[in-house]
Image (cartoon, rainbow, N blue to C red; front, side, top):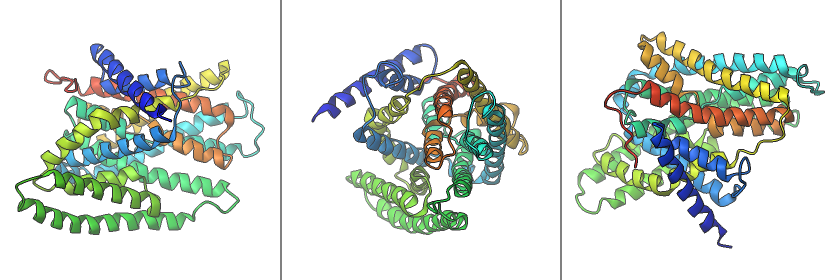
Length: 399
């Protein structure tokens, strides 16, 4: 009955131990947390399995992480990179989509047997999976490196939010074409919901900002209530985004953070969430990604397909997003930084893959390579960010 307490203790202990170990090798500690999850989960020692408790806490963890990212975002810099972020996101979707579809076309039904008659739609769906971006890994790494307010970091965050929206649209279109049961939503309705959510967020965010700012400007004591009010706003906007508009809850959390970042209590609020995230929520979220990684039996051809998928997944984001950044006169280093920040696929790709499996678009033999691609890109991205953001003043701030 109380096994969840032991699970929690093991996750916190192992993520911290692995984080300190990876720090010794000059790598971000988030890599250690991810590896800890892989070691504890079915992919390695099978000590822990995913549970409703871990899943729900990890969901809160990523919401808090994205809310904190919103709090720490330089909104003036964010505004400046608005249109460039759109182009970066578009190219960061198109290039991986073409790359993923091409790799699947080469292997699916030829080198890897598949008797499904709908190979073309399956190949398209593999391309859709590669368009995904998991910004949570990037946010944690940039925070650890102290680079969250860099010009290129603002572009990464803006592009990642847009990438999520484009991913929802692409997933909806493809599954709608394949799902003959009528369960998939009408594409037009989905697009309308996305627009409606951002309009609602703008209106509600402005009202909340005016009330919250007026309240905090005239209060000097017991600022803890501001933290509670902020978190309530974050959770409500996250819930509304996912439940009523089909937009990722982390998008709602990030927008809530942006709203509150304009008040004069931002630093105090951000520091409180930093503690909450560091103590429990972030380790659980990152470990859960590794715990969910359960690899099936692999054949030599599946292994080859996996390796090529990883290479294409990394290079397509680097090329697509880097090219988009170059069009807006970001320097070469910033282009590489932006591309590196968009590499991680994380839980987003797994969610997309599971959705495809439900409607027959995900070949069973491809699930292993997709999981490997997710794990590899999730680990590679923080390492790349560590390298491309490195300068003489950069030090890991987490201990």
